[in-house]
Image 1 (cartoon, rainbow, N blue to C red):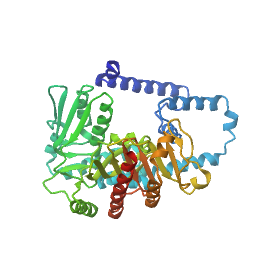
Image 2 (image 1 turned 120 degrees about the vertical axis):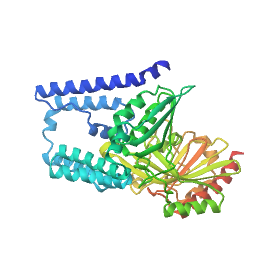
Image 3 (image 1 turned 90 degrees about the vertical axis):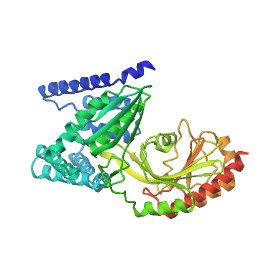
Image 4 (image 1 turned 45 degrees about the horizontal axis):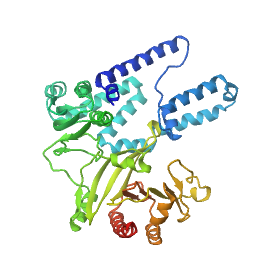
Amino acid sequence: MGKAVDKLDPYKRKTNLNKDLIGIGMSNMVAGAIGGLPIITVIVRSTVNVHNNAKTKWSNLYHGILLLAFIFVLTPVITKVPLAALAILLVFTGYKLASPAVFRHVFDQGIEQLIFFMGTLLLTLNYDLLIGIFGGLALATLAHFLLAKVTIRQFFQMIFNSGSTIIFKENRDYDLKIKGIANFLGAIKMNELLDKVPSGSNVKIDLSGARLVDFSILEKLYDFKRTHANTGGEVKIEGFEKHISSTNHKLGLKLLTSSTRQLTNRQIKLKKLAEKNNWIFSIEPDDEVNYFDSFTFFKSRPVEEKLNTISGNLEDVNWEIVDIVFEEGAFLALEEYHTTVGVIHLPFAIPKFSIEKKDFIDKYLNLSEYQEKQHKLYHDFSPQYTVKVTDQTEMKKFMNDELKQLILAMDLHHLESNGEAILIFTNDLRFAPIGAMTKIVQFKEALKSIIKVNAK
């Protein structure tokens, strides 16, 4: 265990990164000297691997072996591929880079991100890439200056001499207090502060003293939180109670203000619904979402955050209905989805299973009905659904006619058990309307009464 932590030591992480960069640089020099293409970290390769259900970094090795095989053994076959087919691939790639989904994804991160994105795009198209990059940086700097509402001298002092510090405490606990203006211009300083955090420690990052926090810094902090968790440590990011943002996205630019945060129409309705039924309601985004990894559906679809949480307790059953944001794919093919899910935590064990409604193609081709090592197909259900279980006998005891009819009547898209909790959501890849959330509560109450009888 000690060796694993040593490998993730900040100094060694930086050393390994430098070695990787030197290796890439040397490879590019050699490749260019002999007339070859640059050796780069290709995002297309990773995208192809993800689309083909790759799970580990070994997929990059296999990908490289296949490329070598095609180049040295199957060259005659490659030369027969029509150029029109290759052109289609380039057109498709270009479309993915500038599709409406890309603009929507950027807009979801904040209106200011869309302005920076469009400014950089227009400058690049009208001039060249270098002018586009520096123009985009200048546009972002100007926007941050106007939002901060300080003098030019104060602006740069709050970036490069902000007073951000890390406080070392007892029991491997640390406080990182970020002050001033935390934007991309201060990224190097931020890296230096984060590198001082030892592996396996507990860190509280307090942003309450920051006048402005931009997308790049927030992305860096949340990436640090994920990587630091691999060392056995814990990171808490807090201090946004007095900040406002143009979006609910956790990476959206945060600006310190004395104004009260305005609720959306949907949040106002959710708050009234919770107050009417004595439920707990919270609008704050929460990135403590590791529990979703215990469900098969989210093992390859990482959940980024949850928000607008309604929770309650029915006798000894805890439940919550949350809006979640999750991702699927990678790089060029990365898509971000929003949906509302219900999670029912039970006080007794139940079989592990997944019940998924078949789409139009699956109804005729049964593409979703493939066997897995951990899960087997369960056929004693409706032909409109694909059901996978870990234990056929336990599932047969659990799934009685009453429970089966309840699931069919609710017309759910996906229902899954991890052995101690049940996850449910509809087919709509958007936040559920108020009526649908009430329906989830009703299903939860009926489901709880049925499975409690079964558990006896």
